[in-house]
Structures are given as structure tokens and as C-alpha cells.
Image (cartoon, one colour):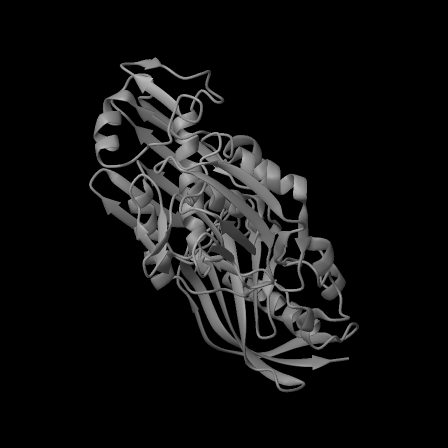
Length: 435
């Protein structure tokens, strides 16, 4: 489900680039509002949605604008919202730049944790990476791969030997984000200071709110992590990815990323990604089995819906569904019973079992939707079935079913299975629901 904060949160500080004092107030927002920045220092307050469509600058920070009204350096606050699971919030500001605080997102996360989150009566809006996406610009690169989780791997390289080449990889649960990414501070090099200040930037930067290096030496206080710079790059990337306006599920691999590359990548995602089901709606599971308040069904919840059991239960998790579409996972492990006899020297999952896994997923959708506990789904026929690529131990099947006709006891669905974004199996399933 979607979340907002429980109570308003006031925060004050100075802007990184403007050096101006600013007070912001984080205010609970209604479902489906997203993150919205509200300038209250103007004769008439103006709101700017935290979406990539409003980005006007991505140089040493990410700036939004509507007309001639701007909001600067939003990435750390946006990362805190995104990493900690805040979907909807109003950010009131009495100046044009979000405060830098201590140079990280830790103080924003602490404030949100202190206020607490309120679950809202609206399903989470998710985007699933369905196929590999990449953007390469010289020696900079961003790649997104299909995954059931949200994770980021980043590599940075700087000529200063105090930083050099660093690599970090984080699975971004709220707990891991808070502990491993949010505290990482912005960083820079003395050799850049004069040029940046001549350009009207970093007026609010100091040794108290930034990690500063000079000729292989650390000038500021002790590091919070040995690899703090690369972790801060992950923080910036998370903040910029949030501008898609959805919770993204995928594995992101970045090499020397920066705000400009990040924003271009989000624009590419916006143009190319297909929106997946927006979680489990209450109408889809009202009164039925499983847990209608969750966006997923685990194995135990699936067993409440389906009669299948080992060794023929071929679903591990339902990732999300609405009234006509469902997405799930099957992890293909090396100890599956069918690998013992199906080409044991070169094991391949039988194609008919991939079809069966898709069919079981469709049955979960049917039985949940029509609230018919105790009934069963029989599949009557298959059309247009194609197996496009072998499935082997270690693969993860991303399964989906979408209704073609769900008007009554008889109907049909389209089903597909993917491995790392590649379509491996597809077909049309005809079914009957019976006692």
C-alpha cells in the first residue's frame, strides 16, 4: 500500500549552492499525490511535483521548475522518501533550495522515522524492469536489469588517490538504506572549489557538511564509511530514480553516474517501461483468501488459494495483481525433482511445467477475484504456445497472466514467462471454474 508521514515535520538549514537559510515543513499528503514541493515564500504559493518532467537542471544537483519558480538540490530529501517508503508528502519551503543539513540524507530519515509512517487506503504503484535498459555516455554507464528487489551497484573512479576507484552494492530495503546509504555525505575536492564558486555554486558548503579531499588527504572529519563517496553516489542515484514517480523493482548497475546521466536514464525509463500492476487492490481480494492489505502473497498465502502441494506447487510468490492481471515468481533451483530425470547431464526445466506454473498463477487471480474459496480452476486448452529459450537451474521465472475474457465460468488468459527480461514462454490459456 501507499504511505505518508503521520505528523508534520519542521526542518531548517542552509542550501548547498545558494548558501541561503531555509525552513521546510514535511506535511502528510493524500494518496496518489506523490512528492510535491510547495514554495510558500512567494506572493502566491506554487507547487512543483517531484517528477522527471519538471527537471530543468542536473549539474551538481537536481533542480525542478514550473515556469520561473524553481526548487533546487532535491535529491537527498527525495532519496530519503524513496528509500524509506514515503509515497506521498508535501514539502513546504520558504526559499528555493532544500537544506543541505549534514550533507547526507540521515537527518531527513531520522525525522521521518521519528514522525512515523501512516498506511493509506491505496495500492502501491510499482514499475517492474521488464527488459534490460542501458545508457552509455563515454566512460559513464547506467544499466537496469529485471529483479524482484530494488538494488544498486555503483563504481566510481577519481584521480585523487584518497578516493581512487570504489565499488559498493546495496539491496535497498528501508533498513539497509537507512544504515548503509542515507548517512553518506556529499564530497568534493579543493581543486574544484574556485571554479564552482565562480559559477555561483557551493556557497553553503563547508567542512561541517561535506567530505573534502586535497592531494590524497582527507581535510574534513572522519569518514562514516571507508567508501563513503561511492555510497553517496548511490544516494544521489536513488534520489534521481525517485523522479519516475513509482516504486521501481529492478537491479541498477552504475559506473561513474551523476545527476545528468541519472536524469537522462529516468527519462528513458519513463518512455520505455511498461507499468505493471499497482499492487493488490482491495476489490480484487475483498473477503477472499490471502492478505488483501499486502502487495504480495507469500507461499503460505498461495496455499490458501490453490489446492496444489509439493512437488507440484510451482509458485513461490505473487508480486502483485489487480482485477485483470497478476505477476508472480518461480525460483528454479538445482534440486528440483524434475532435473533428476530431464537431461540430468544438462538439466532443462520441462516446457510443460513452465506452462503449468503460468496456469497456477492465473488460477490465483481467478479464485481471488471471484471470491470462490473451495472451487477449482481447470484448464481446457492452449493456443499459440511457444517456448523460446531453455530454463535451467538458477533461473528466476517472472510470470504474468492477463485476462482476455473473465466474464463467467469460462474464459481465457494470456500468459508469459521471462528470465532476466527475456521472454522464454508464452501462450493463451482457456479455463473453466468448477466446484
